Length: 214
Image (cartoon, rainbow, N blue to C red; front, side, top):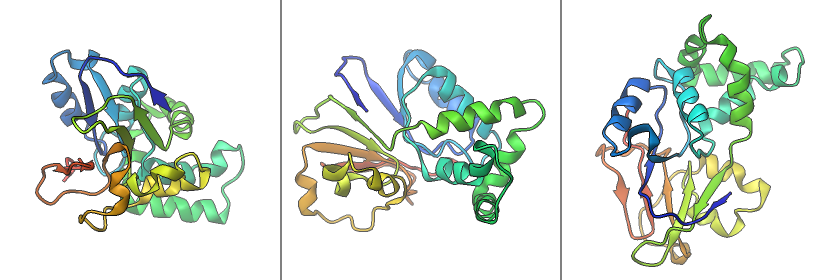
């Protein structure tokens, strides 16, 4: 997906992981609060207590968002249900994997009060893109490229559907300069929790998962 350049500030929020209270507190600090121009880099769910509420905020707010590995795990866990089928063995394995990785907390958030949100939220997650591009150049002329995992190495292949898993799962393995960093985009991504609890920013990319849920 590609968005045209606009003048208002853009705020990129990473890996909320069900921390609805922290998300609301953060948004309240922005100049225009919930009317600010927000973008989310996925992993809205799991581990924290209020995943259903976080998804509802982003979905109903119409904020752009890319799919994270935790949304993908949840979709895999409910794959048969989404197709109106009985759970098969593969889906049961996916369910167990998701539950072990924080999905148990998400399950609890879809209680009797918010259970009706589950299917609309799954349908919304299924439609999330693997990347977003904004025509907003930085001081080096690089435009904005947003992914959940470290997507910069795969930018040239971004339109290949097989690259979706890389955009969702890839981690920042090497912080040294590489030839692909000469691409004309600046990649902002989450997924990799920064031990300093501060974003790791270079001239070519920014890793912004500061581990809110921890």
